[in-house]
Image 1 (cartoon, rainbow, N blue to C red):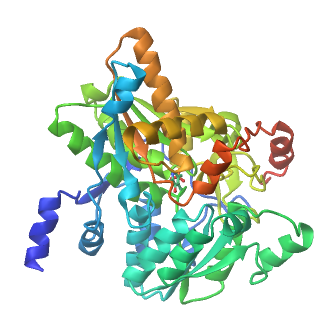
Image 2: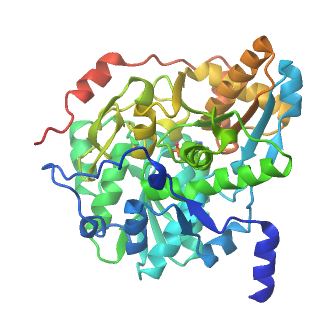
Image 3: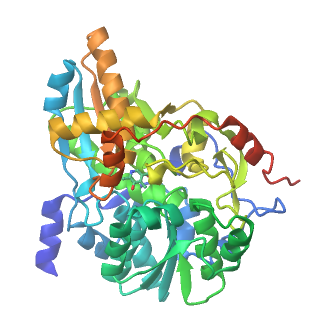
Length: 454
Ligand SMILES: *Cc1c(COP(=O)(O)O)cnc(C)c1O
């Protein structure tokens, strides 16, 4: 034990997570039940362990990372911070471009940063099984890994289109001992209902969440785990920004811009919020900091959605959260960045966007692959399609610096590698990858079904 402790210190893994709820300009809007009443902690306790419920509602600025969690993080953390010199040179920009490489985790993305503590707290609470949904497969594989580390059974509802397109992600989850089903499935009432109405649906994250939550709510030995969106997930991901800050500090730098892809918002909040915390504390270096969330133009929750209360899932099982949403039953076109298909965005990210403290941009699919391929050829790492969104915007900002001659420091979150997304790259190379327009009509239809209460 003693020697591991020394190792942990040598690894410089942060000891506490940063919680931006302590530094918000106004108190966060509470989750509501469908009748408009405020959701109570006991109700969240039906599917989450006590420590997670506490973190979900906490306004403590610093929350300790359990020792056993840090010990597992030691497998890959701290994640490297890399300066993309070859990319800078190819662009001819005076900007310094850095990326935090989260693809180095065993599952290949940032998602184990939250899967590991979630599995730990569930085991501490005596839970035996976890259910979850997965879109592209990254969250499912992360939870399968984490469940295995703490001796929990894991059952995963995988969005049908990904289940079919990404057999290797499924096998990865199975290798880590998880059970994987295509969603909608006939195992749950919500799955059977959707299959009866729309037998050919490609599935969606919202539908898969309904299935996983239904099962967890119905069994005492089973809890649910969510891979993004919720406050405790954003909290866990703050380890990315905290490490990046230390790493930049060692070379005397501070970012002018922090950029990340935005699906549910945890990878964006994870890298950006510790810097926004500096800004809230009056740190002069952060005075002009820009934090930019990048979303696909085919699923533009922040840039085209409505800021209102909506359900987190398609069937209305979860409490409602105040967030930017495209409507809970919005099913985006078959975009390749599966991790960015969610209909809403974290309420913390949404609240900061509403307050004008962060920015958001939507980028079309082809332009993200252009950027990802350029990056792979210069920097060697093949990025996940989700991560390509951040690369696109980092390149665009670096090119603006070229015009203005400004030597800005750009930091972006390279959230994962694209080794299981080669069929998307294949479509891109053969010219079969399309841009999907913002489906204004579909979104209107879905927004018309927003919950009404009070
Ligand atoms: C899930 C995922 C995202 C999106 O993350 P959010 O925290 O939901 O915004 C981005 N990149 C990769 C590689 C992912 O797996």
